[in-house]
Length: 144
Image (cartoon, rainbow, N blue to C red):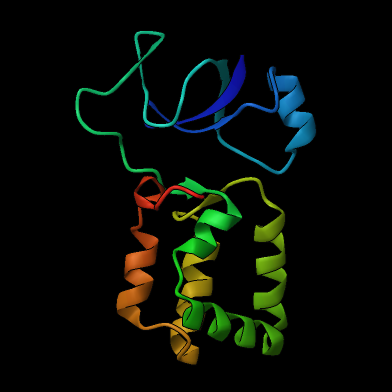
C-alpha cells in the first residue's frame, strides 16, 4: 500500500515510501492536499471509489520533485537562476524551501511569483516562464 495525492479525481503523485496516512503526515508534515491510502499510480482516475486507468493518455502531471522541476530548465537558465539566487535572499529562501519539499506544484503561486521575478531580472523570458508553468512532468525524459 502507498499514499497518493488526488487532484480533480486524478492521482497526481504517489509515495511508495509510506504505507499509511499517519506515516505520510509524519514524514511530510508540510504537504497539503487530498491524500489517501491506495495502490495507484499518477494518471489513474478515481471513479466510484476505485482507481482506473484513464481512457485517454495519462493526464498531465503538474506536481513533481525538485529534480523534475529543475529538469524543466536549460543549463544556461539554471546558471542564471543560481546567479539571481545569490543576489536575492527572498528567492534563495524560496528555492531552499522547494529543494526540501517532496512535491513541487507548478500551480503554486510562489512558483509563479518566483518565475516572474526571474523574468523581470532577465534570467528567463516570459515565453519560457509560460512553458515552464504549463509543463507536464510526464513528458520529461526518463531518468537514466
